[in-house]
Image 1 (tube, rainbow, N blue to C red):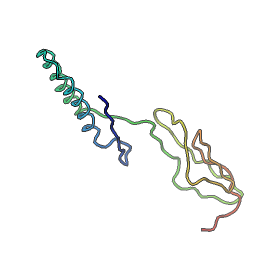
Image 2 (image 1 turned 90 degrees about the vertical axis):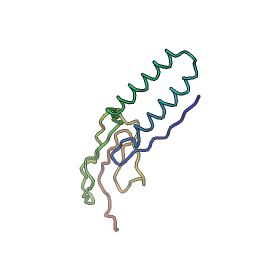
Image 3 (image 1 turned 135 degrees about the vertical axis):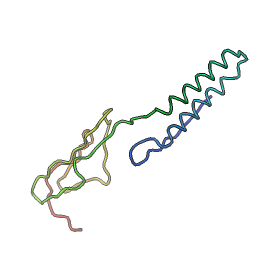
Length: 126
């Protein structure tokens, strides 16, 4: 038996409908294992389902990594080094950071740390 599940994150970084997904997964596994004729075994599995459903009400998941950015606005002056924009990572370390579109004009992006730093060369006209 092969099961596949797709998880969607909400704006808070939490898995949407996680309780429903886990309940369906667990019940699917349990129902497929109920084909055996041993009544004691069936009762044990039923009890496991009941315990799982009760404990699922208190279930929560913290997805990692959880990142925060040091600022959401940077004032930059041509020829003056900016205060680096850094990422704080809580939980498991991020393997790699990326930025799109690529930055230039004297600024650089460190894919290992997620830091933007440098000195703008010329003013950009918007």
